[in-house]
Amino acid sequence: MYSIGEFSKKTGITIRTLRYYGEKGLLYPAYISAGGQRYYNDDNIITVQKILTFKYLEYSLEDIKELLKKNDSILESLEQQKYQLLKKKKQLEQMISTIDTAIHIHQDHTAVDPTTLLLVIHSLLTEDAQRDYLKQYLPEQLIDRMYSYFDMNFIEINRRYIESVHELKQAFMCPPSDTVLKEILERLFNIIPQDLAKSLVQEFEKYATIEVDNWLFAIPFTTEEEKWLMEQVERLKIHEEVIT
Amino acid sequence: MYSIGEFSKKTGITIRTLRYYGEKGLLYPAYISAGGQRYYNDDNIITVQKILTFKYLEYSLEDIKELLKKNDSILESLEQQKYQLLKKKKQLEQMISTIDTAIHIHQDHTAVDPTTLLLVIHSLLTEDAQRDYLKQYLPEQLIDRMYSYFDMNFIEINRRYIESVHELKQAFMCPPSDTVLKEILERLFNIIPQDLAKSLVQEFEKYATIEVDNWLFAIPFTTEEEKWLMEQVERLKIHEEVIT
DNA sequence: ATAAAAGCTAACGTAACGTTACATGCAATA
DNA sequence: TATTGCATGTAACGTTACGTTAGCTTTTAT
Image (cartoon, rainbow over all chains, first blue to last red; front, top):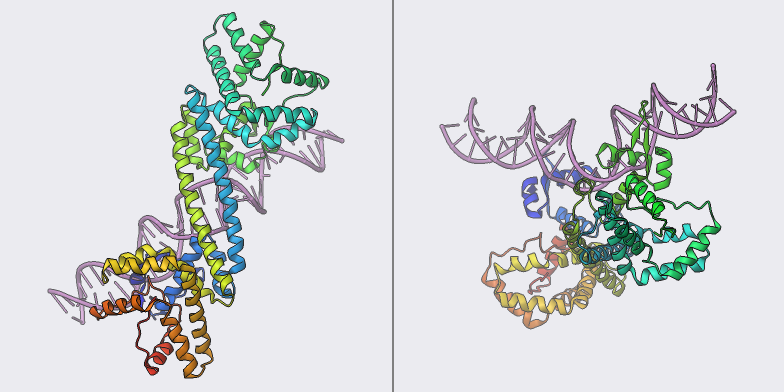
């Protein structure tokens, strides 16, 4: 028989946690003295090891309680748990790959605006939703062509996009000559190849009322920057479309 | 300008969460009416997308708050986060592999006692601690030999171990003839090859006082079962050592 | 003007304990 | 036998990121 302190040292579980497991019906001390003191024995050790094993497999205490009660085959439960863990692993891998992409873009262009970078990541994450949204307005073929081009040249497109956005933000703070500004804007509009852009413009014109959803297609400029930008585009008579 | 309900629908974030982000200093509505109503605008959308991106990367809200404030390079933070995620991934892979082992053992022998299986898993998880503990009593070379044999034949050893334990538990509930019981016990003692067992016995005898730590080396029997088992071993005059 | 819809604050609940605060139990010493 | 001091006991609040009421007020539609 061990006092709670001894048992705690033996198992490495804190006293509070042992009491908590008792309270939750996971681990009852073998004996409780008249004064209320808890005493544990070797059978309790086995239960603790079961609990720790299940916890390692990321079961909740509630589930562990049931598993300890049942005491029949745990195979099914194990397989289900494995499935959950595999799902988590897949998600983790996606996250890591997303970060890798972000780091890669960042290294390409150190002066990148964090806002823009985050929006690029976010647009990556919601690509499927974007496609679905666009289907309302544009022929599917065109969308596919657009995204396949986008996916293939992902890093390069984003590098140029981020660069342009950065230059424009600088220009907003400290306006350059019209010639320079025009050059910057033209670089932005030329990120997407001319023929693809033309098809897009044509389709967009069919739906004069179309308004880009700013939730799915975030604009990396503040409302003030955007307003200024619109004025400049108008003033310099650049009549191309702004593509996300 | 959007009311909180509209903004919630647009972004897919619950009203409660929007208010919570405000409370925590992550997202302030662009305007609050005299009556206290919150109104959001397009700039808020950008912030929300940043928040979601960071959340996807498993940052805490507290960290996100700092990241939103800073607004300078997030590269370092990204790399750190990637490191954390890689660590998590590694752990996940270990867990999955542990479950696989358990399933494999289980399939080998369907009537396996769940308690035993869990203890096998637990002993796997604490193998390093076991080795360290044994170093106090046994020469390192012997331990290495033992564990390398154990690792190499892991599945097979456990299959036979679990089988023996299962048979003994049956025997406890419904005692068979002495001949049968003796056979079962001999099978248990023969799981480890004779020469290794002999070396172990010799070493153990040097330290007469050695007492197996029942925390690290769990015994899959209840105290009653164990007592009965000891009696039987004594009665049948089997004088080999019980190896974990 | 009145009713319905939407929004407000405040408070409690969740999981799995950690961390106090303060009251006893129990063993060894004076 | 009384005291000291450490090991326990219970009780309650703190943590994260919100969900879920309850009860009241603002805004919107008729």
